[in-house]
Length: 234
Image (tube, rainbow, N blue to C red):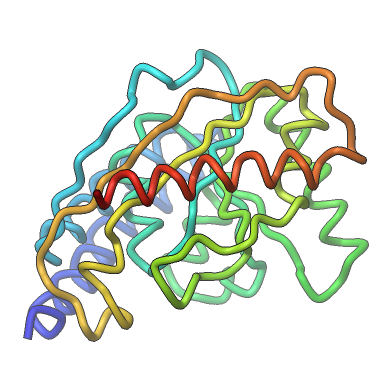
């Protein structure tokens, strides 16, 4: 029942906020103005879903650019990050999302980085562009699992997106999204009100690391995110 009530609100919110976000994306190519609109869009969605977000660890957010690495358990993860991670970040997303009205258009105009996963060369080139953006001062948020986890367990973190931090010489900030499976246990159709915790952990320096050590770096970040999810549920 909650999902049925939330869907019209989400659709209306997307339509109302989508127009200004697209316009601002055209006028302000930095993407910061569009990001502010996205923050309001995300919070309206979460309120309509009956989801309260409690943020912990704001003191750990570094000055300057960083790669924020979070676990990915549901479709609500993106609104949670946009709504409550207080950083004007960009995300790495599948290029196919560009075809989705409003959402895809916003991602493209808002300066987010698309990746063609079906073409390894183009994917690497997209990640190189993302690293350049980070070096110029733009934080990036990534889901290193690559796809949504079917359970509450944190999946394996892939090295690809975390190699961005090594290449750009910026820290990685592990982020645990805790309890999201409690509000959407089996997808948005099973939505129920509840509380989700966004736990921001101390940043990890990428200094002294190289591409060969990216897998070990990913495993280190994964362990922190997993531990944060387990402790947050306790």
